[in-house]
Length: 111
Length: 115
Image (tube, rainbow over all chains, first blue to last red; front, side, top):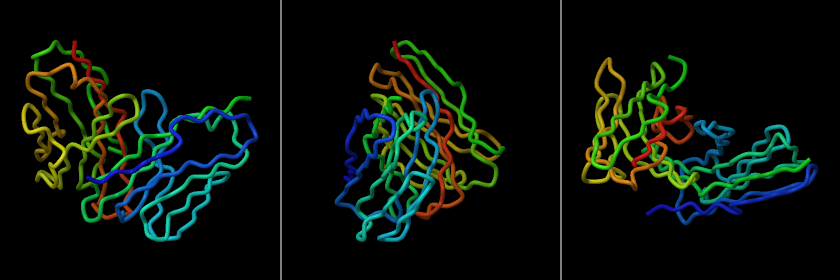
């Protein structure tokens, strides 16, 4: 059974602080995707990382894929209240398109 | 269409009743995936289709759950004789390919409440 451990599951910080969310697995993924989900909505893709060691930046968000394609991190610089929400990592199982989701990180950024 | 359309948005069923959920994938997408989200965050893969063919059904409960994707019709997920533990949000996603770098687009989900 493939598992993707995401941590922390809850994070409450002040505006302007930095944070990092981690996703770790013993399984190799063909890619790793990060989603953001708002209440009552489906997950919306933020980024896909495909190559081991790949780093992608999306404004204040930096995503990294581990060299062995088993783990990933999301770093947010100078968090803002608008960053508040649920962040999900999901590993893509090779040749299936199937997503294995982490447990999610509920982020609250206080003004 | 340009988005994955799921209906209904909310569904309430008494224990033992049947529930049927629908998903219209994005036009041109060959793959459809069903996921169950329980306890607010935990996503569980149920089944995937490549066009009208079952591609991967390793997550489908052996009993009571069935799914179809027929040509020119929305895909459907049916639960016979619902149980309390079936209460969850069911998401459908579609993508152009099963390859790793391909984006899966999610619908807004159907919230099933079994009472």
